[in-house]
Image (tube, rainbow over all chains, first blue to last red; front, side):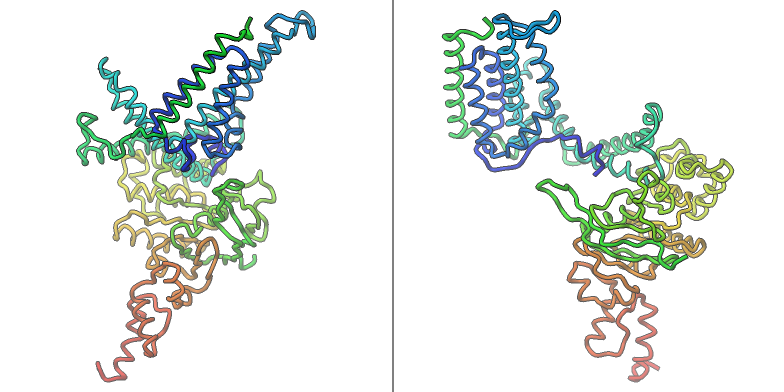
Length: 274
Length: 290
């Protein structure tokens, strides 16, 4: 596949049979949100340490190789570096280094390490979710979670259906783009050289066929859905309904215990932010 | 000029290199394609035939091995790979999906324009490419999206023929056409080949199509080039082909079964007419017919 395309990693789901893969997607989403919230409740190293431990346990249970997690961290390396460098200059304590008018104090170092660990664990938690949950399960679970919004006349089912269709067609469209690019390159299209405007212009022979085929696919899909009497979410049942099991109960209990620990540490021990 | 126009040496291509999904799509292929021949490439889905041909014009770069065009490695100067693509024209499957210009004429001139030819030369090439593919002149000023399915396909093929390539590769050009459209298109490709005397490579999984038009056939199976021979010789190896999931034309199968029963008929019969030439004397000799 063309390098431009293989670089885009969408749909990060890595199929497996681990404990986390078998968990109910709704529970996974809810717990992930809870963990992210608690990363921000944690305000000292013991409480943050508990969250890091929880992240380590989740990674271990996910059965996904550590290499994959490192890859997902690589994408945010710049953000982590930038925020921790900026945080170096904020905070009191003993003076460590003076660069011109800027001072680095012990408090700043602690801050920057703390923030870096926070961001990294945030990414790790969300990676655990996306690595172990298939996109269809994710949208299914979101639909279920958003169901109360129906009260406000929000078309939850339609939104979920659109998300499912969009996700479903990402690989198809990537493949299509790849094919069209090859076909135009075979006719001498030059995609790699030239200035900015020239490169934009070179995209026209790729984008137009891609639009045309997206519309064609959309029409075909709409037709196929209508042929199978699709008429929205009203009264629709699921082939694979989500089920909570004892496993989910155990996960909720364990996570609650850790979160309780985080709250206690945060409340009883001194905060790093003074 | 040597007899060989395109040659591969121990060509290997990997998909998903260095990932758990690594797969050898083309595995040590060494073949020679003769100048001016009509070569059919046959293989089951996933046999590596499409991957192989995409290396002929440098759309894919081999993991190892060489592609020689007129004896020169096409990757000697990677910056000049476009020149190779103009010499080795490639028509993809469902080529009508690549149309993008406002008029058919402009779309066909996309290739020639990339070659930086003069306007005069471009106009000439568009006209002759349209003629070769049987595209009516009045269609040239229409939008490509107004054409019928068959016309779109012709317009897209014309877009490659207009580059006047020395080697023309067509990947499943008849896919999705009705039988009549398929026959017409194949006839047009054959007559183009006869008039231009260039090399044509036709990829297909239809043995009937290959039998009708090609001089020689290359058979691909799980990434390897297993046969490259005259078409009747290839088709006479029915049992081997069938073990690769390839079905020989029905008439070839009947004749081959007769031969196995001990009747003196040729092994690589491709058409009903050839079969009649074999069978009528046989029946006469036995007194079944006069």
